[in-house]
Image 1: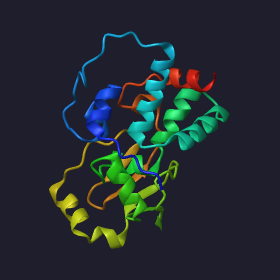
Image 2: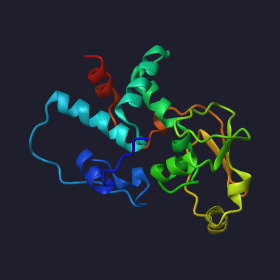
Image 3: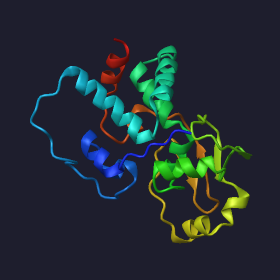
Image 4: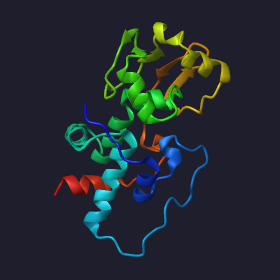
Length: 198
């Protein structure tokens, strides 16, 4: 399995992302990294937006391209469809529910089979959730120290409106499809569409 070994904070500075988006800091950094004065070309801006989304969700090029192809076949705006597809990934949903402190940690926990979807164990981080799906910590894993302390310390973050979480039972439900408004970081998805449609 391919792994992304880039230093997170350094990459955040390069791409102009707040570390809070990645789950590494609770305070939002308004000016992540010094902005260079050199004017970026159109291609550089398009590439930067694509790399930003890929880095946030921990997706490699081949899979990201597959999401783009899928987004083009869906009704509606391709850019918004693309963001909604990556937002629906199981590792992202686990992170959004507060069951992991970062998306990288969520990806690892999902890979190790700590979560169930509708009662069935799922160990595929790229699994796309649907409306009505119930994501829970598996029975075996809920007795581990990590999840016990999570329950006791109540370190949960606010969940987006398309998810509903029961922190006492360590489970969450997908109540709706994510919308463009639910994307909590700055990204111009039109630039990604322009890049791929060349």
